Length: 48
Image: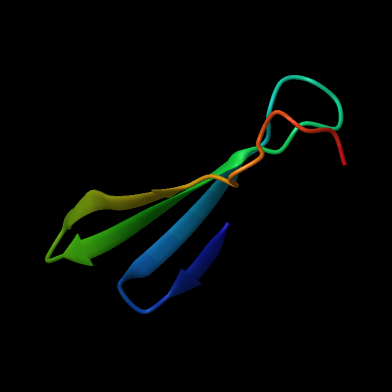
């Protein structure tokens, strides 16, 4: 998790070992947070 001003990024690891997860980007307006992006690698199914 990383917070910079009104932007928050939360990582979600994949269930399988060695498989890439996803990062979700949220932005804050007032008291409300809205998901603005979902970041996934192009080869998410490939082990690292």
